[in-house]
Length: 399
Figure 1 (cartoon, rainbow, N blue to C red):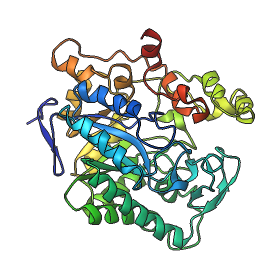
Figure 2 (figure 1 turned 180 degrees about the vertical axis):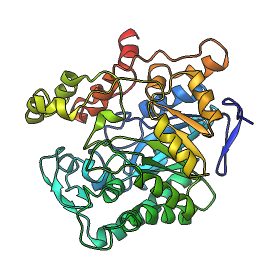
Figure 3 (figure 1 turned 30 degrees about the vertical axis):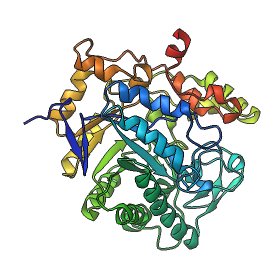
Figure 4 (figure 1 turned 135 degrees about the vertical axis):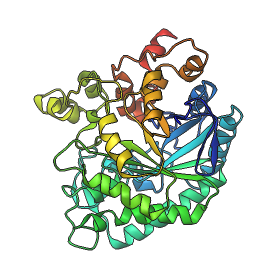
């Protein structure tokens, strides 16, 4: 029997009022690296708008794991604000997830004041510094950082912990043969390259037990010949299922380093992207090199569906479909095809109350036009904190 999208559902030990999820999208509302009223308001909008679960984007497990210096590092100082955030969301009847991770080579070491880490040494396009290869001590420390972060988040009231294993972030950089050039036990076979990610998932689960749900965002493909891709990503999903540490997988794609537009289909606002960058990068982005980096992919509804179906056939654990979901018919089809949940990003930036309006029969489709100007706001640095807010630009202009 096909599940009802709007009926209550369970994600691990967590009861959700429906099967819709606000996906993690960078909020740009933590200029001091702490929860603000603006961040709470950001997540209250989709929570009050009907989603079952809203996801707080990128909560770093270590200082060098921030994408840049304004990102929240989960520690004792951040805990009171995180608790205030989760309490506010719970009052709406929605549940709240926190995306925990380490940015690895996507981190801006210059902004953070500490060199970034990756599976292997490489130049950083973010900071124009060299990224350091993780040592054994780094891997041990970061694994413990994940467990410590998970404990603080669970104690702060988060219902779901989403481990970021995609988009060329640290765990993902170990998975990709083109980025992992190590000569040790962390490279070679997929068993070796996946060891760090699986070790982290196990450490998080052992720390929190069944008190909260634990999920992972994984990349089906990085969209690059030197990135992680199918069929290995399918095998990785099977490994994660066999380990038994996760309650669901969210199926993503693209790479923040190798092919960012693979996940964000539609218009490529290259000039707007360039204006958010330092002068040296700005020139490069406006050149033919920039056009080759920000590839153009026409928008299609549920553009990751075909790849996601291969994962649905390969594993039996709950899966979260992501990527260009705007239409109620698409969500219903996802339910019919065996996906347990659907996650939406840009559609809910444009219309935070879209789920309520769909349930009321007022609409069957979101009005996001995939201009992707919201991405340029996410790319802006905190030096322009007013420009980093990823609520839909059209809404900001109207309001």
